[in-house]
Image 1 (cartoon, rainbow, N blue to C red):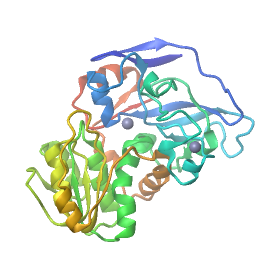
Image 2: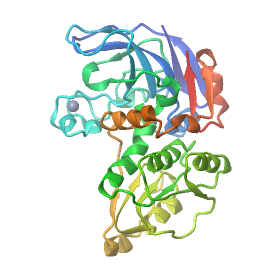
Image 3: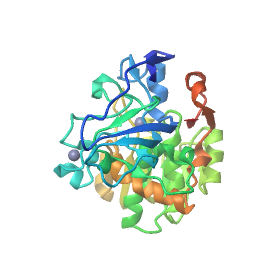
Length: 339
Ligand SMILES: [Zn+2]
Ligand SMILES: [Zn+2]
């Protein structure tokens, strides 16, 4: 089968590899139908991430089940499913608590699409993908939902949900500030759209990029191009900027006893934080890798109900064969590759 492989900075090629086989009773084989870019893919392709080539790329998708192991009773071939980018077992203590990013049943940080640094599970721009713990990992897609619309449930949509969903459940109707702009910038936009869908009192989206601000407005958020020293205050704030000034804005704008979540990855210099102000106000700061499997059903449900329209964030949908050219072209906030 063919697998799209990241071979070096700005270099992608289809490589012929052996098809994975059903290796256990609990596994499934799936065929990705709609693959979305993760914001991190832009850094990977540019050679600006810690993940070194060559490896198979792609870690967000909706797929069709091709085959299941004898121990898989709840899933059938032909079903459409969302596939989490993280491998998790569903049986360990961490998984039972919903902390699937730190599953102890598999090697630390086991994921699709990041290469040997985090184990070799292949990428989603492939004809067949093996899913080791199918009944736990795979989330069925309700009928009527377009696979391309929810392809990012595997990662970026879920990443955005954890930044606003639990905080808005604790403080229903709270005002939300999202500072966007990290990489191609889909996560901040999803966070703004999810906050609106979850009934936030108001949602403000800060980003210097005009096109993304227009998308945020379509999602129902107010927008601001500048990054001032502080705004609000807001009970729920999100740093999806990967910019030290954006992080500082989110933290300073968090109301007393509020929650600030950073979905951004600071690979290089570690930004300072206004710890005295955070201490004085009693601000909770959260960061870390998303527990994707735990968050996926929430975003899929919101999309199925029509409350969230993730397709508004998608900048282009292209056919499978055009994947390498479209990925290398850049300029996308969210590229979806379909067949
Ligand atoms: Zn990702
Ligand atoms: Zn586990």
